[in-house]
Amino acid sequence: MPSRLFRTGLLVFCVCACAAAYAGGLFPTRAEAADPPAPVDSHPVTVLVFPFENESRVANLDWLGEGLSELTSERLLDRGVNVLTRQDRLAALEKMGLPDTTRLSHAMIVKIAGEADADVAVFGRFISDGKTVTLEAHILQISPPSLSPVLTQSGDLQGLMRVHSRLSWQILCLVDGKNCPPEGANRDESSFSEPPPSLRMDAMENFIRGFVGMDDDVRLRLLREASRLEPSWDRPPFELGQMYFERRDCETALPWFSRVPPARPDGPEASFNAGVCHLIRNDAARADATFSVLIDRSRSSEIKERLPEFPEVRNNLGVAQLRQGKWNEAEIEFERAAVLDSDEPDYWVNLGIAKLAGKQAAGAIAPLERARNIDPDDKDARALLIATLESVGRGADAATIRAEAGRPEASEGAAHAATLNVQDPDVLVKMARISDKFDRALLRTTNEDPATRPATHVPRGNEGKHGENNRGPK
Image (cartoon, rainbow, N blue to C red; front, side, top):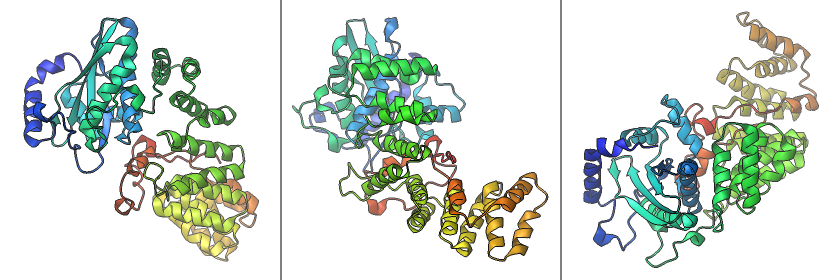
């Protein structure tokens, strides 16, 4: 969080930044304040919200700094703004070698936001005497640097949701002017669909303490309590589903994921993880239906409904089809996944498996070689390639791979190949690889014109924590 000292130490920066902002027309003058300001940029901006600094003397409000950050993010998401997650912020801090307890100056906020690929940072503070609360926020554009005037709202602490909602509208009007309501329009908490207008302070406190907590049992208890207090709020069920999903307790995770509406910001990931659970439980038909719905949304004409194409979704649909004996359909999905992300070896391995299962052994060689070139240490890809080469009479090529440099992993792959029957579809299907990591970064492309959206996936290694596509359960 920003420290109290940063306002003094960077006063000159603030004055210069504000002057530049006014001169450049980014932020409105007092005379212009009645009209909605223009967006920060012509393209959809990406926003990173930092925890609000606690300048109160009320000890039991220590959770509210992170709470205001999450509440701001959720309300901006509710209006279609691209907002980075807390995990994105923590990943940027970790990459910079900073603990999440670091108190941040403006300069550090700029660096962290830049590391997270944000266009705009939102930060602020709150002051409360236990009865009333004052919220303050600044919007900091990263490039070129410019700082907004302070945004302020005050009211009773028990009416925090209404106070924060008014502040959220001020923030929204600065970062996304096209969604700014006209003067006199409803700007209280009921004008946001999420979180629910009825959101209770105790539900929010339980959620935040569970969301940021370290002990899993305590987190589960707090998140369940938040869900009990606010049954219509989908954030606690999503986080509960995530925790059980990470444990591979799909029986418990699935009911929680089912409480997350598909159109909500967490909806696509909840659906994806539910589909992975169906595969883990070997319910291929339900997995097929779940992933097919996500793919159908990529063709929606409604911007709010439309999703980008996810290679991991295509891959998992292919796995579900393999398990149903739909070799040709699975092959098409794996080919599409490989086009979207050509650097992921799992998609090429699965494409080779689909061709082998469909009795196209010669056609399986190229994708298996591609997988092996991407990851030379992939034992299963090596074993499949050796067995496939031998099955089509290319024993010399198979022997060359077997004899590779005497590496232990190469020998292990060769030994596996000796027992692998590439003529048996049941054996092959069991080797198909499930993607269990959902790349939420792609969701930020949904408000773009599909004609200008990049055709390929982010290259492996550049997408950050949420882009990791580890090999899932086999």
